[in-house]
Length: 131
Image (tube, rainbow, N blue to C red; front, side):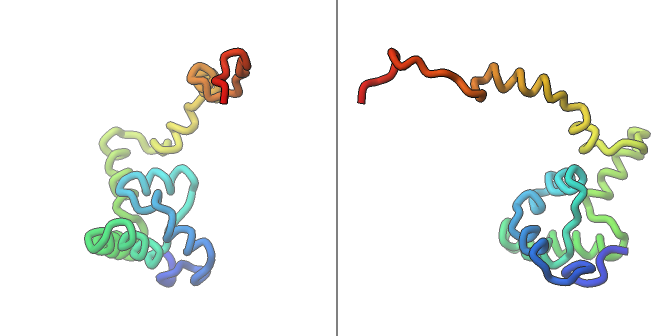
């Protein structure tokens, strides 16, 4: 089963406050991918409070249903959808979210950033606008 209390197995702590305020936990589908990538979990109370903060009454209600499902089945809606996709595609050994991260090639990322001029560039002072 999931956590033993609304605040998780450790009770209310600083991680619950961070989970409550972290919007990535509360965006539909993005939250499930985010938690899979960073190998994190969110307790029922932070899920509901954050859902209410970022989604209003609908966010609170959907977070409550999601928390109930997690408590009953041990998985939230995002995890059930991931399992469904794995069942349809026949993929059972890899997590699609972490598989994407595994495929990232840091050399290609650095090259792309250099092309986009996000790396350190030298400024020619002769072209500077006088101030």
